[in-house]
Length: 471
Image (tube, helix red, strand yellow):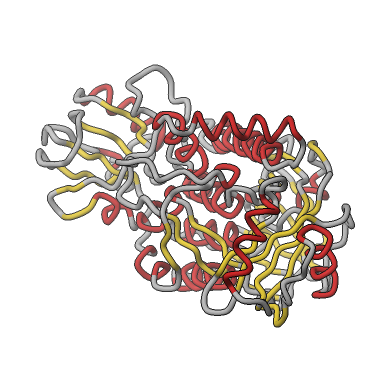
C-alpha cells in the first residue's frame, strides 16, 4: 500500500492499515517539518478516535484543554451540559507535534515513511498501481491513497474534478508579541469587533497573542505574510499595529471551499485535504481528515487481506462524502456570519439569540465536533449508524477494547457469539455494560452496525460488514 502525504491524515491511515498487517509505504515530499508552529484543535470525535487507538493519553500531554464551546462562527455561548462523550473538550496542540506523534505511531506499528520523496505520476490496472517518483524510481502497490493536501498531485493526476468556490477573502493569522499594555488591547479589540467579527487579538500564553486580521485582498500566494504586512493591516483595520513584534509564526488563508467529485477511481483513493478544502473557521479541517482515515483504513485493509464483503470499500465515499458536504456548508454559513455587512450582522444577532436555546447550541456543537454524524445503515433505532460513546464495561472503558482496530460485539445477554468472524471481531459478554439496548456490533471505527439480541440477525450483519465466516 502506498500513501502520498504524511500529514495527520496520511499518518493516521498508515497506522490503521498496519493494525491489520498491511504493508505500508508513505511518501512525504517535505524533508523537514513545517517551520512555523500553528496551534490546531482536536475536537471531541477525534479525541474519541485517539482514545480508541490508545493514543489519547500520550497526545494530551502535549496539548491544552479548553471547553467545547464557542466554535460556531466564534459565537460565545457556554458548553451544553451533558454532551454525549467521555471526552467532551477541545485539545489545542501544535500541528507539528500532532503530525510527529501520529507518524511515530505509524512507524512503531511497522509503516515505512520516506521523506523528500515526491510522487510524479502513476498508472493503474486491474491488479494494482505503478507509482513513479520524481527521481525516476518506480514502485508497485495494490492501492494508492492521496493524502497530499489541497494541491494534491494524486487528485490532479487522477483527473478528479474539484468544484467549489475560489477564495473571495483572505485572512492573516499569527502568534506575536505586542508592545502595548494589555489593558489597552481589550477595549480596542471590542470596538473593532463591533463591526468586524473576523478580527481577533487574544492572549495565548505569556506575552504572546494570537492575531487574526482581514487581508487587503486575495493574493493567491502560498508564502506567509511578512510582519510589515501584518502591521499595515492592523493599522488599516484597528487604527494601530499594537506594536506587534517577534512573531512565532505568520500565515495566510483564504476561504476557498471545494469538494472532490469522487473519492475513488479504481485503485486510487483520496482522503483529507486532497478530497476537501474549506476555511479553518470552527477548526474542522484536520479533524475531518483524521476521521476520513479511520473510516477508510479498516475497509481498505479488508480489501487487501481478502475478506472484504462486496461493496465495503465503496461505503468509504458513500459515508464520508456527505459528511464533508455538511462541513463545507457549515463553514460557508460561518463565513457569512462573520462578514461585516448589515445583513450578515443581523443574522448573527438572531442566531446568537437562538443559541440561548439548549437544543440549538447543542446541535451546532455536535455538528462542529462530529459527534452528531450518523451514517445511513438503513432503518433502525436512532443509535444505529452513530458512534458509541466510551461507556463503562466490566473491564474498564469500552474504547480500551478497540485498540487493535477490530470489530467488537458488546453483548449484555451473554448468549451471542461472533462465531466464524472471531478473527476479525472481538466479543465481550457483559451484562453490566452501560447500554440501553441488549447488544451492539461495533465497526472498527466505533460506529454501531447492528442492535439486537437475535443470533441469526447478528450473523447477517457480521457478513454484511466483515465478509464470509471462516471455519
